[in-house]
Length: 242
Figure 1 (cartoon, rainbow, N blue to C red):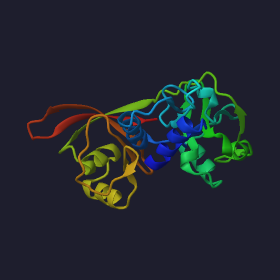
Figure 2: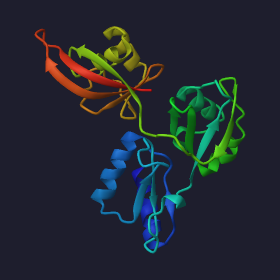
Figure 3: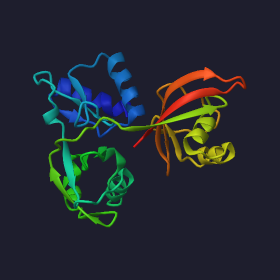
Figure 4: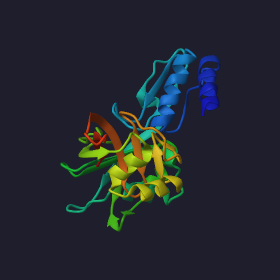
């Protein structure tokens, strides 16, 4: 990934050729941000279709151009459903990936439960495939270009728990209500990601603000670490993405 970023930056600066990555996950974004700062790269922009997008592309512009989000080759789509019907984030992502579309080509998927609006950002190269979709989870749908009246800010369900320690297996157990043993097996199976990367070490330390994705259960963020109980356990607040 870093070699690609270096090549994009060099082509933009030396050959005046615009270039952009695919969508980066949170771990990749942190690595990319540190890399461009460390190497004093110029005239770039992170953009995912909305200011508070979770997944973003990194684009480099020639010295003569001002960074412009409209020049980054991504498109936002509103997903139109019949009144009274709904689909989940997993349904939408699963439908897209069943077409052979790679995850890196798909940005944020937003569902506004209050308004009933659905939206997704994708790279332009897969636009024809997206526009050909007529069903998601057996619900008839259509995709129209443009995203309006939808809040891409993440929505959460707050969970209050006590855990034995700030270890990955304890956190997974708390998020899923599974036993520690079952949680450890889930980690070994590679279905647990920490900030976008698979972690197979059950003892891996977690920290405030870390995001843990568990296949079949969703995404969770450790939002607060409270006081220690008399028995030595920790009060924690977990936010589950909804």
